[in-house]
Image (cartoon, rainbow, N blue to C red; front, side):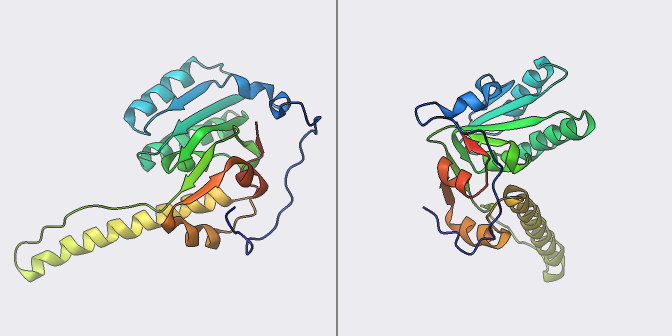
Length: 208
């Protein structure tokens, strides 16, 4: 289990207790049939599926979003998450997140747009959180003075990406027992959390 001993404690939301031999899923029957089911790489194709399923979903009441992904484009994840936020805030609708099997990288970015008490994972699911990575060759050619704007532009791009990354980290851990500092410390080495561990740390409400 990942050590988060330095994290600030916070009381977990209470849920209805069931007998030991009763599946926990009985507490959350609406999660059995998500309105929007996403799987595969987080990319423009996923966003298109997201939009199509959202348009076909009921226009009132709770919405359940399920995802299983090994990662992809974090900006697409942020776009989908922001649309969920707008639905929640402007239409006053409850939105639930359900992670299945793998919620890696951009999948965790999408999850961050849901409050911790609206997040669920299926048994055996893993969450993976890591830093953004950049792989790019920078070609420099010309007089020294003309190279400075190119270098500054790339530096500004990196600095802004770090700010966006940190915003996402804060959203992921907000309301949980994990501190922002702890997530920043562990993300460079790829932080993996099992479903039950994520629940015990308050990162999700429950495991079904």
